[in-house]
Length: 254
Image 1: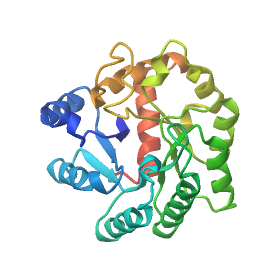
Image 2 (image 1 turned 60 degrees about the vertical axis):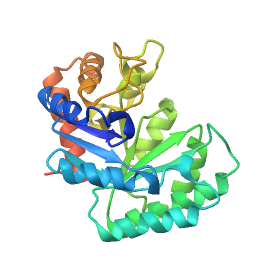
Image 3 (image 1 turned 30 degrees about the horizontal axis):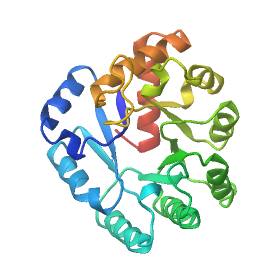
Image 4 (image 1 turned 180 degrees about the vertical axis):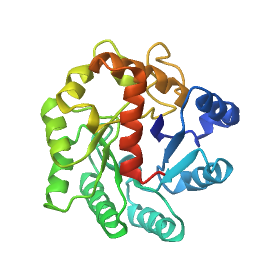
């Protein structure tokens, strides 16, 4: 398994990070992709990448909820890191209108800028969308037939949005929400097919059942794998094989 979206570099894991990594490996998590948030998380992310070079891969980007009045400075910092070090993706980037909408224009500009960087650097993108699918699609249409490749992490749209996302060539990132009682994700993922899905945790957030409400960890992705196998009536080994291959192909992981 490859956990395609995680924040285990965050302070929530400072007391037991080594255990978290070991237990993830023990249950079959081969790699974890660390998704950056903003300038304040870069040092943490890069330190963890250095400590666990065979386990971690890193994405560099500016999260939409970190876009405010100093966004140009933040973007410059992100750009400098992208030119100084090797990352496997740009992320996480996107639009978030859940908490507030006052910086929507700035969010769009930042999103568009980072999408352009992805094209220039030939890197995939990790897209965050919350209450903003129409606006994200609007930005993507700006690129016409030349949108970057990537994944809509922690996919939260409906069947129509899923169809459009996959039509554009993107994957859907699926995590703990798939295991929740009142979600329609099983119906949605069946509509797009398993070949367009990636496994993720978004640790420390969105832990799957039976750990819901607790700090999420990469090892809990086993529960997402089990649920996905049930939805598609596949063996867990087959789901692991398909989603891991998709992650390798998208992110260029050998």
